[in-house]
Image 1 (cartoon, rainbow, N blue to C red):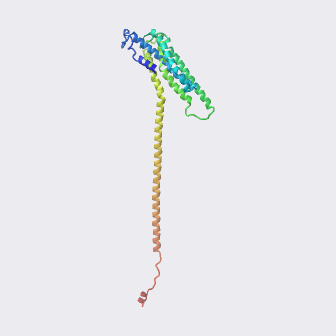
Image 2 (cartoon, rainbow, N blue to C red):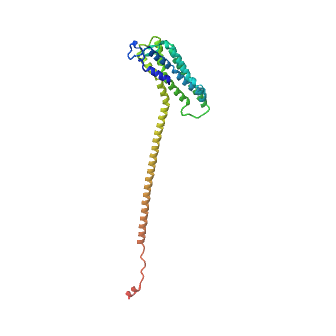
Image 3 (cartoon, rainbow, N blue to C red):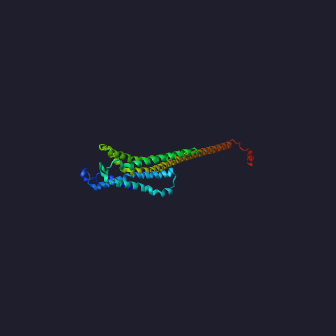
Amino acid sequence: MLRLLLLSLFTNPTHTPTPQEYYIEGSIGNEASCTAQGFFIQMGTTSAFLNVSLAIYYYKMIRLGHTETRIKRNRIWLFLCPIIVGLAFAFAGVPFYDMLFLWCNNSANWWPDIPVLVAIVIVTWTMGSMCIHVYKTEKKSQSWTTASMRQPFSAVVVWQSVWYLMSFYLTWPPYLALQYLWAAGKGYSSYGFTLFACTLVPLQGFWNSVVYFRVRVKKMVSEAASNVLSSNFSKVIFSRYSSQAEEKNAHSVVSGNADSASSAINTNAHRSIGTNENNNKAPPPHTFSDNDSKNDG
């Protein structure tokens, strides 16, 4: 991270440390400021070896199966090696630092960017070898089991490696091609490509942060989508349950009204039948009383 900070810090001022005798707009520096800028830019380019160290860390853990405890024993070398290489090339370039088109840099031919070229080769081989190993291991394990995984682990490793290498390739290959074009005496007239390469080279930390936060953002988006889907599913289930409950209530009300009407009809029918029966009954036989006998007399 310190290397990336130094690289961004000393490439952003561009012409400011350039000696004034070059008559470049914005240049207010001198020979000492030009040397300082070139020193830290040269040291910053070897920050590519920090990516090499990270790739080796993944290789040891996944390809070689080393434990975290075992890796911690040698972790100091993953930091020291890039620093040693960077300092060695930075001090070796002190006699060669001069104004180089956009900023002061190592004006020697070919060798200043060898660390970047070596880093590209090592990182590509390491990540490729690790992906092939994971793929072969997964194929062997699938022959012994019938369980299907939602997403193969090899696919996860491959995509993470692709994103990691993409952040690496977006930074260094254009700048490396530009440096070798300048070493060959060409490329000075291609201002567009020069601007493109020199804009990308300080962005190594930015691309690494994109790769780092991509997994976390993807997880957050997946969780949010899952929550939304589960919430909508709950609403659908609740609405269906409510509609079914309403249908049941309506059915029970209709059934209750029908039963009440039926019972009322039956009651009225029984009443009317009882009334008709009473009306159809014969009057009781007439009995003669003493008064009737007297009247007859």
